[in-house]
Length: 345
Image 1: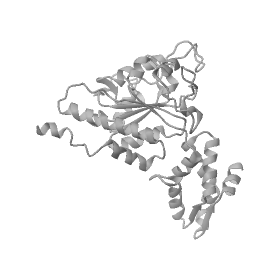
Image 2: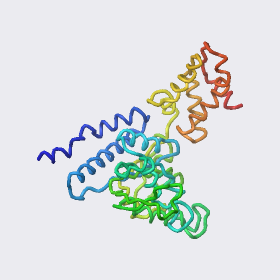
Image 3: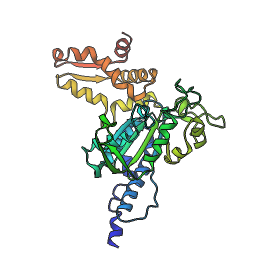
Image 4: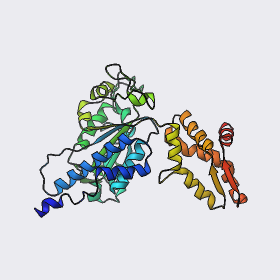
């Protein structure tokens, strides 16, 4: 009886607590954070259940994240790994090719996770593997999707290869991810407890099979119809692959207000970071509300979402940072006009 109770010793990590911690870092995307919190919690329960001798009857909750560029897909996954205190490995699906062709085999995704743990196999076996740009490996239709030839070595072939790691048990992975072609430098890893998070923008998935627009392609506040399995199959994904990513989560496009909040409020917000940087040169740096809104609007115009904010701030602050040591003791305020002039120059 004591051992049975021990299975639940981690219950202080609840979906609500995981959500609350995600909320400290990630602005908006409430539904996505709730879905991720539930999936992560169920994944932890499954690991503990198997660790204490439970039968293999609880399937993995691999995740598919769909949303525009800069909506926070990668950042959410990285933050989740940090909260759960597990290793994390980022992968770009476009680098994968079908086995036997020049490029990366899908096993390299697990090799990167092993590398992140400094070759600690037991730690890697409970990590998170993130596969970005998953939409780019949809099956081609006569080469129309990417302009490539008829041999689909980066599309359906990669999907077939991913099947064995998304629901696999033990595989051999490369110890050296920079020389993964060396077939003699491999180690066996149990991947049954590795959580896979796949993500993509799906920017050309314009409408569903019944003609209704799919929510996040039309901006905030638009239709809320989400992509169905049928939509994704027609888009070019194998039904077997979709069956191995049962948790689907839609991220919304960020508004200018969201981006201003991202700049100022989260634990890793950029504006406080640059204020600390300037404070080291004894400069008091401030931003007006209008200045922040101009920066956010510029990011939206570039269609980069939150991903474009740092580059814009760097350009806006460039004239100040260049002479910062010479302006010690000053108070500098960044207003909307200053942002516009700098970005237009």
